[in-house]
Image (tube, rainbow, N blue to C red):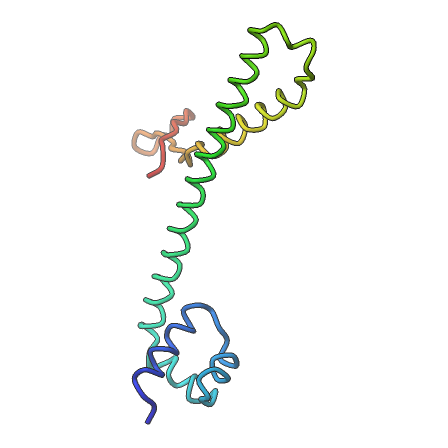
Length: 139
């Protein structure tokens, strides 16, 4: 009889997407035993997969937020520098094409990161559908 710790480790490894072959090597357990455990612990593996995915999504949200904040700071700095150069009348002396391109790229990126998913809704009365679509913010 295999220990509870081995079964728990099996659930963790399956939740991370490891194959039966890799888990068999790590736990020193036969593949037929792992297949049996897979059936026996199906719901536990599913729950662990859910939490694994939830953690990945949360990490992505944090990274996305940090990236967005950085883009906003960079855009703000680029626009402040451009304004400073314009106010000092130095736009002719200093090549601003790169600064303008950077500001434009950062602005596009900020717009892209702030776009909300939209849901299309068709309004209807009974069986009669109106061709107008309204868009509502998802979430």
